Length: 481
Image 1 (cartoon, helix red, strand yellow):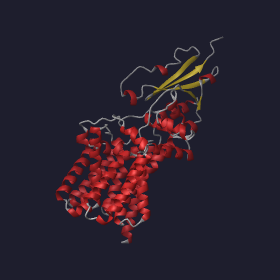
Image 2 (cartoon, rainbow, N blue to C red):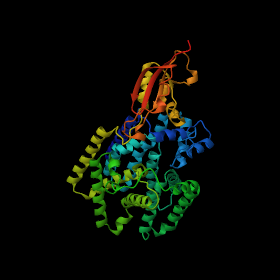
Image 3 (tube, rainbow, N blue to C red):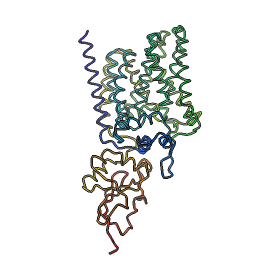
Image 4 (spheres, helix red, strand yellow):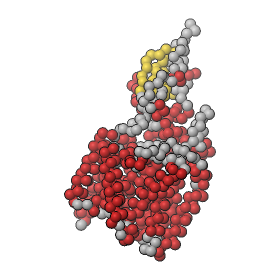
């Protein structure tokens, strides 16, 4: 028995190391999107909190205005993380990577509360290979933190039910993590709603605990509303978001995005639909108390409230917004495999594990919107041995360039035009028609990238174009003699 247990621990450790390796491999040399540049600008650890609030509410300097829509708590957590590390984009990604990796052992602990160890191990393996979770583990956004906190919240909720609310430490931890989770991402209210529904459905079974549980729920809800009143007022006043409700949502339900391909998404969606349909057909009163029913309620509540809010108030159809249900979907499907024949069980597992692996190989670096190749541009500058660069980009983009660790490791210097002397050679770096703004449309070079073209005091030596950027090497000459 001890050897059997130790084998599972070794396998789990290997899976976690494997999941970390995949996430770190994707993490290395990753570029940023425009919204990540904005996040970096907001969380500058070298400014005071008043200035951080101004940037959070949209002040981008130079008259530019673009507010953030995520809750502010993550911005301040990331700001102080960077204060104790270094203000590099890579460290901001490291913050997300830490929570992305921690999600793996936490997923196993939750799976173990729902199903047997063998299925918990398999669930963790699939979660470790999930391409959507891998990609989100390196974004300078709060998604990895939200997934981690969501799973911890569910684990603690199950634990306080198991211990009949007698463990004060567990109850206190659950209250704190729940308030933190809701304050980090308001869409996780769907988890809170599902827990309330679960308690109401099992009213007779847990009647003795009812008053205490609802008192805990009340503390969480009131605390959340008080702490986030200003943010909630701001967000509920919005009648539109970036992502619209579309017909395709009703036959994909994020599964294509969640699992990285149409085929794999279809397999998981069909499996989830089949097991859900079978579950409700065969359901008995005693099954309503099981924790796999709680997981199913969270998943269904999230989809339902997402659609209702999008129809009645504002469209919030983006897979990133509801990423916290992705590990739950995987855990729930695998836990229900115990109800199928052993032959089907083996073939299904073989197919989805192999499918996830091949999907990783094919789509590892593929994302719907490609990032500007800033790291490639900086490498070209370093290889040229001309390490002075000049840019006329706005505060946000300039800050994004300056916070790349490669600027320091390559000893690249930023210069102003007034500092350039006769016969100085420098690179002019310019963002040109980025794909996140114009798609794949071919357009003329932007005017801001041609400021030296008709200037007789500067001769262009060479030009290099990388995706979304132009690099021009110039030499300053004195035409007065």
